[in-house]
Image 1 (cartoon, helix red, strand yellow):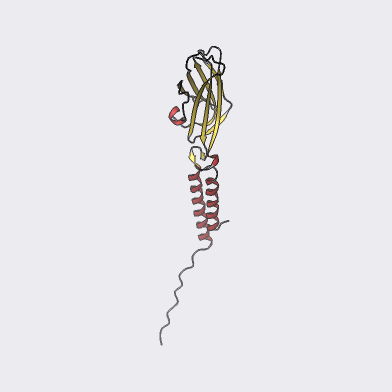
Image 2: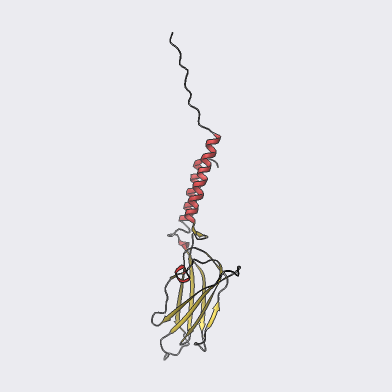
Length: 197
């Protein structure tokens, strides 16, 4: 296990696992961290809210998408949907961490916010445990869906690929040093000159 060639094999195996799993072209590159659905009913001009179960973010690139759709129970004669959505990420575990909030106005016919970068929306890359609170008011009954998606392949906000390369380079370097200490290079032997008679 201390042979330099074995270190190179381990590094290549780790890169291969990364390439076929959480690399940008890998199938499980993206995951849905949480999705909350709010049914705005009754007095729709009064803010209604829902809070998601606990979920976690690793600090990597994340997006949030808010989608509003008119409820099937809404009257066909009702006006085009207008919704005001408030989104909050509530940190868990440490009370000194402040919650992050964002407001989004949605209006027919465009009732989709699209994928918004969490770092741009909240001014930081969220990391740790959270609950997501979604609140909304609207001019008619509606369904509000908020989905947070995170890219895999990050650890504490650092790309896993660079961690693999750094650890691999350190591992190879350490093995080379150990090998040189165990088998020091042979000193150059100079044959003694014989005086001609």
